[in-house]
Amino acid sequence: MSIPIKSEKEIESMRKSGQILAEVLNECVKRAKPGVSTWELDQFAENLIRHKGGKPAFKGYHGFPATLCTAIDEIIVHGIPSKDQILKDGDLFTVDCGVIYEELYTDAARSVGVGEISGVKSKLIETAKTALSKAIDLVKPGIHLGDISKIIQKTIESAGFKVIKDLTGHGIGRSLHESPIVLNYWDGKEGPILKTGMTLALEPIFSVGTSEMLTLRDNWTLVTKDGSPAVQEENTILVTQNGSEILTS
Image 1 (cartoon, rainbow, N blue to C red):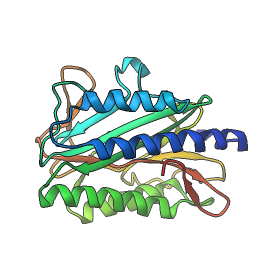
Image 2: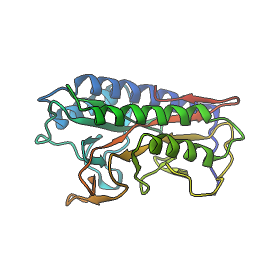
Image 3: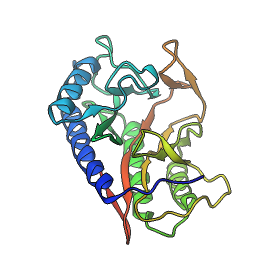
Image 4: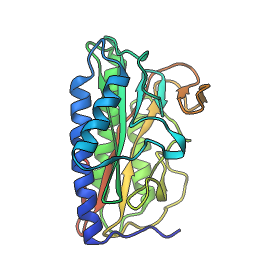
């Protein structure tokens, strides 16, 4: 499995792509208020990406119809924004988006509470941010990818939550999904060694009660089998000479 190393020029394009994406996600999170439809957020996100000179990475990808993936509560990932999907007080809301700039891709997601949310949903969001942050802190040349998977799993499971094992992080850059697959749990293998110039989308994805998921009739939306809330937090990371750089912050 060869993991692409990015050139300085490609890294610069990914930085610009990541800056656009970070701004779009920040603005979407600010607008995620009770009464707002996910369709409105999607229109806003697409317009802002195009205005900044980027292209939505998800729209048209394997036929996906939107710029954002929007997830509320038991929706895990790949939810399609719609005029009928209205945010309400107490929702756990995840917005996932990708940007292409000068043919280079970045991918990131943010999870937030809409209005007042329950303690368990707050703990889910906090755990997701912690798991991602601990994973990023480990990233540097010479470490094994398996070490990242281990710390993500440990953080999620020590909080009492369930890793959704079928969903993973991934390499990214020249395309949306590249080698390697980044598991959110340790499968007993050390995995490849990280090198300077690799770019990864790290994304802990887990739920309150189950590792199992179901696909809804739209053939995109994945939900928890037991209906319990799920969460996802994601950033695109560059492996630098002595550590890492978050390209989507």
